[in-house]
Image 1 (tube, helix red, strand yellow):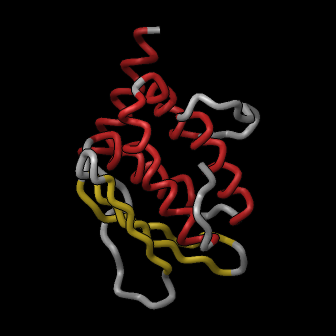
Image 2 (image 1 turned 45 degrees about the horizontal axis):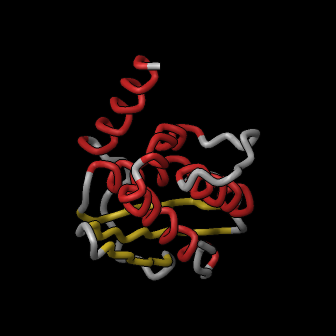
Length: 146
């Protein structure tokens, strides 16, 4: 179990130190949504581009803790190339997982699975979720159900 925890920590640290798809584009074909967490200072903006029901790009910008920024980085890698319906299933399932709610283990969360331990730290759940909530807003123009 300790080896798995160390692997999870390593993945989070890698995405925090070397974030993927960081930086927003000045392009009107992208939808953008920003969420701030006033309790801890996390501030994330997600930008997504959808063509023919497929996510062709997903980017982020922001400041925050390692969990928040790593979660945004992992999200962008998972989302790019997915059909919107599949991306929604992954995002909804991820949010259930980190909240310790029943979720569908048959849906592959890919690297996002490393955030499963967040559920035992209630104060960090928001850190791990705001990028995903913003993503749902950019792609589906809906607020994630809490």
